[in-house]
Length: 228
Image (cartoon, rainbow, N blue to C red; front, side, top):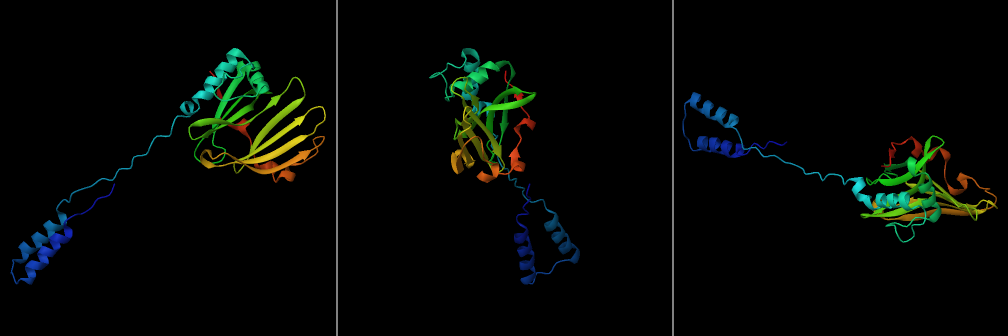
């Protein structure tokens, strides 16, 4: 709150002007006027700042929660029935673990907007199956984890400090595939490819992509909620 002592300069000018005009006053009366000028209550103005409430994450990602309920009910065969398309095997994984589904809101790139992570319990810890971000107010997929029960396709991902998304896609039969690093740009600006490589027989290191193990963001330690 700010207090503005308005009119003080005007009062002082009047006092000085009176002296300049040669007006003679009793010392006690003059002192009384000065004291009154200094202690007169001045008008008070209050400056208030209106802070817009942070949008509710469940409202922002309402279409995703609707999709997950659809997957729980119908299984993996949900092509054309979702607001945000899921890979068949990712949907299959969510449906198979529908009784242990969990979700997490977490700001991966520190831009003030939370991303959404959907997963299930695996070996006593949350395992992320799919991650979403907001493009404006529209949820979009960051990446999906899945293990195809036919064909051997595998997909996995994790996050690193600085808003980095690390993805690996390969075939289990050969161990050959692609590893990529993306940066999640602020405020829904999308993903920018930072680094990529092709590998054989899973022969590569994080350092080959400019990543360090110690910079991994461990989502399993975050505050996951049960999906209801």
